[in-house]
Image (cartoon, rainbow, N blue to C red; front, side):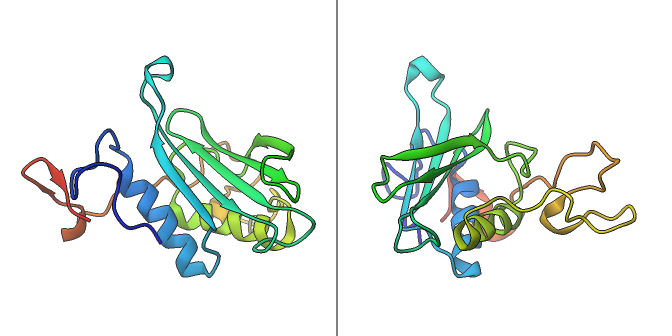
Length: 168
C-alpha cells in the first residue's frame, strides 16, 4: 500500500503519473498480491525526467526459486525480471508483450502480475475468447492488432485537481 508521493504532502514533486502508480498498487493489493517493494520516482535529466515504477516480489512472495520484478517507465511501458534468491541476481529481463501499451489498465497489470507471481510465467497470449470481444488480460482476438485496454484516471473526487494539486 502506497502512502504519499515523494515531496511535500499533497504535492507530488515531478510525479505527474502518481495517480497511475497508485491505481496499479491498489489493483495489486485488491487482488491479494501486494508487492514487497514499490519504488516510484523519476529519472534524471539524462533520461528526460521520465517517471518510473518498480514493483518487486521477493522469493518469499513468489512461487518458484526466486523473485519477480515488474518495471514500468512512462515512455517505454512494462518490463519484467525473473530474479534469483537475491533480487539483484537477474536471470531474465524482457518486455511484457501482453501489456501492449505503456499505460495499461491497472486491472490488466494485476492480471499479468498474478500469473507471474503465482506461476513465474507470462499469461498465454492465445488465451483470448473467440469472437470479437477482448479476452482475459485485455487481449484482442489473434487476428486483431488493437492495443490492450488503456488506463485513464477517473473523474471522481479523489482525482480532481485542487489549486494545482492532486488529492490523494
